[in-house]
Picture 1 (cartoon, one colour):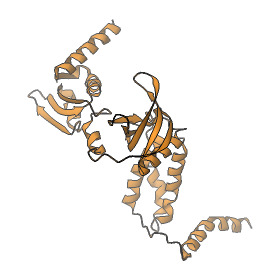
Picture 2 (picture 1 turned 180 degrees about the vertical axis):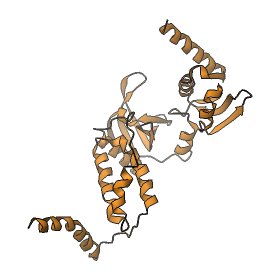
Picture 3 (picture 1 turned 90 degrees about the vertical axis):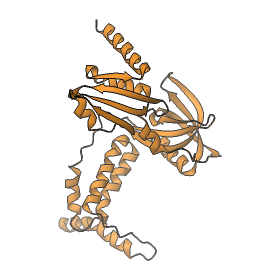
Picture 4 (picture 1 turned 135 degrees about the vertical axis):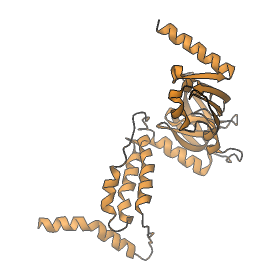
Length: 279
């Protein structure tokens, strides 16, 4: 009797699916996901660390549990093995539990092109500010979820951290997406998170750090000059004075900013302060 009950429960899902496919007014797509396609999906699933602990994270897992329904014969049993190939890294991920409604409202506003009224925690002066925004795009950066938003009153486009949005309401006003704004171009031109602060830098790196620096693309416009002693000079056009300063300092004595003068002086002053702290 127990065996029969288990068999019924085990096959109920398949039976419902077969019956669903037979319904005349419902058509399910005949999707045969290949192994490379499923692997690609799991690469994308790695981004779920942003939504860990939220309802969105649960929906992502639920969606992946349904992949097996459309998998080719013999592939469903490989999905569990595929999962073990992807190790989610969430050490520096921000916590978005409790922000589900704001994320959903932002999504709705972007799709409908609706202006929003927000209360936003300004990190620079540690104040809650109220203003209207035209939300344009989401993007991820180092475990954090951000948006490009046009400040309605001033018309300039800024990056905003989603977790700092305290409250948000959709208004009855609509906006047009700016024709002259390319979010991918904005991100590729930024060194890290700031894209509206242009800088042309020339930085020397020791031979010990040269291989590490050469294996990455640090800026959309960059040029590397090899030196006789194995060191290199990186020339790049990017944005984010503070971001480049922090990055150059992270190499310690293995890097030296040659240009611009303002950046070189700023780093020199920072080093003096650090020496004062460690005296």
